[in-house]
Amino acid sequence: MNKLKSLIFAAGVMLFILAAVASYFSIKGIFTFTPAEEYEDQGIHIFLPYQVLPVQVENTGATGRSRRMNPTRTVYIVYYRDMDAGGYRWEEQVLTREIGQEIVDAKRTVRRRVLCIPDKGTYITIEPEQDAKSYTAGLQQKYVGILSASAAYLLLYLAAWGVIRNQRSR
Image 1 (cartoon, rainbow, N blue to C red):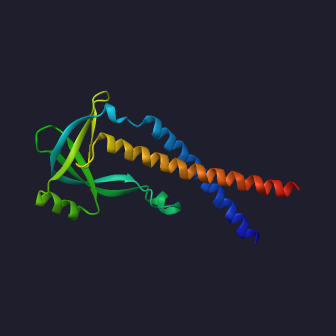
Image 2 (image 1 turned 30 degrees about the vertical axis):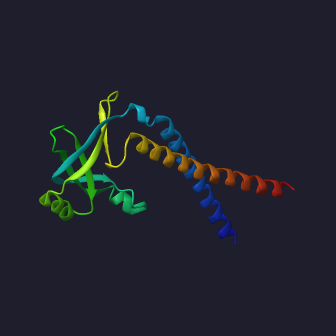
Image 3 (image 1 turned 45 degrees about the vertical axis):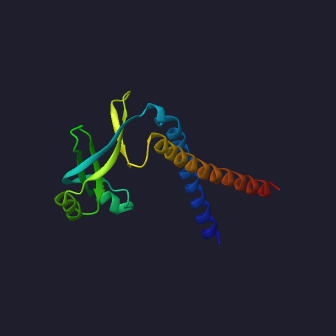
């Protein structure tokens, strides 16, 4: 029974820390994402795949010894360029090199909407049916959802901790 209690306590503390970190990053995201008014819509562009390359990324799927022995993993990225000579680029992760090479060989084009951020000198590409308002509304909804869930857990944890502490002091 004591092992179960200590396991529940440890899991609760880890979830508390995770909820606190998620709250921090969602609050940071809410205050730092670019508002819709700052984007300039450059229209829908057609992107053509031109190469697939392996890229090393941090291995977040492994834990413990496996992560220490394999700190990185290989993913395959298909690179696209704008056919309208606008100089825009886009990339997409694929499961294997073969799938990526099939996309490049088939010359499957992709339609993406380009939104420029003139103040930062950058751009993003989004799905063609979206616009700057729907994109930022989706981001805001995501951040608020994460913040709500993590804040609810934090409050629930603190309330349970207060009740348990109050019962122990009696």
